[in-house]
Length: 297
Ligand code: R5P
Image (cartoon, rainbow, N blue to C red):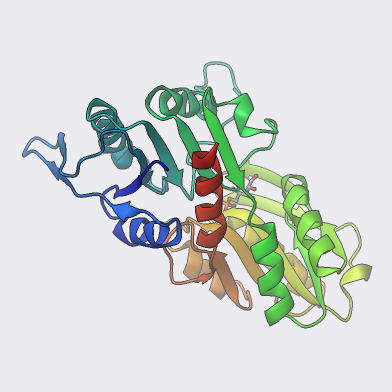
């Protein structure tokens, strides 16, 4: 069997340790630092010849992470790693999957092309796939998307009595319907109009299925939290109880978390794909299993 070694991108040591313990795999040593001019220096300090190497690197706040990540992947290949796999619980840049206005860069395609040039495989959790239905339409190498739905459903079943799920927009229906099926509860999807990064309006066609139940808002990414805030306000405006807000990826830019709390959200929980105080749903066992599957093939 090929040995597996997990390397941590800067700041991702805890994720790397966790994945290594679950695979199981050993932890690789490396040196990564910045030169005084801000450029990155990478040196691998563990033998990797003939091994499968996994780089743990969540790609939230991605810009400063990408160059060291590519240097590390390249150095592992140079040092003889058989395959180099990226374990990115959050995959950035997926929302811009087409040019909405002429001249726009389609970042989903560009990032997938870049990563496909340096990695033999990519494992992530619920990438924001809307107009593109499968990661393999984007990536030229094997790409696995772990679904958070089973873990979200398990958390809701344990923590919310009599839930009704609410998806804030049509894009969320794919997750919300899946989780609702597992929890065996009703769900509704709001109509959402986004006029700008921080300007979101939602409306609910009918609130009947929510009456007498605890609303649970579910979304994949909580970034500015404007979507969750608009949905929370709308639910409260309808005279329903404060919603439990469940997000997969806790991006929470700026004061988004505090603003969501201030808007009247009940409990706010997220998966541990992006480190945040709201992390309550452990997605790493599913991720480690997906990495093991990919490396077994
Ligand atoms: C959009 O299509 C996504 O599914 C999320 O609803 C969106 O990314 C949330 O962004 P924000 O928190 O900035 O409203």
